[in-house]
Length: 263
Image (cartoon, rainbow, N blue to C red; front, top):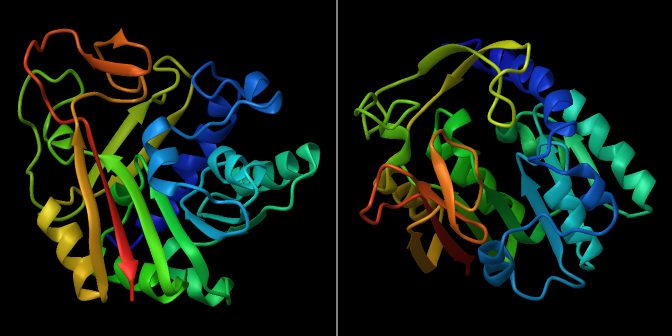
């Protein structure tokens, strides 16, 4: 579907105002100092003070700005002009020095000329992209020699299910674009917005093979039996910051993480 960028940009332009007003993103606590990164991301990133970090698909910039607060020289990239404009406003409001660029992730090298110590991406990012090899090539190109790619993403097993986790509704492997018109968003199921989205499922083998082919070396990999966000239907918080399906009493992978090195 050649118009996926148009549809997905419109989707995120509509979702951004709803997300900004939501308890999910809790802008008030963020403006008063809350770090939006999860404990897993903070552990993977380690000490970031003084590092240059490129955040791909940054939405309206909370994580990018959190990295800036931690002393990194952070740059965020996102397709949504509404989200990027808000990220720039927040940066000015907080007196930080993060930079934000509005572009398709594949076009990043044409809009951001320098290379970075770290390229970072997380949670709900790659499903909007059709080609993992092209994505991996962007990451490798944007990293300095010796730089790291830090990635946390929802598990591909999650995306096999329907919205209520009652049946297998989608292929595990990438069999082409999936097109869906829906109402609301994950922060507010009843929000008065309708969006048409185009997305893809990406298996572990597709993601890892693409990153390895780009010249990066795997340095860590892990899977986690909980979601750090209450963003799916029928979840409950069994431990603080750890959400799992109410109906499932067995361990299930909700997200994974990996780090890669550019030699």
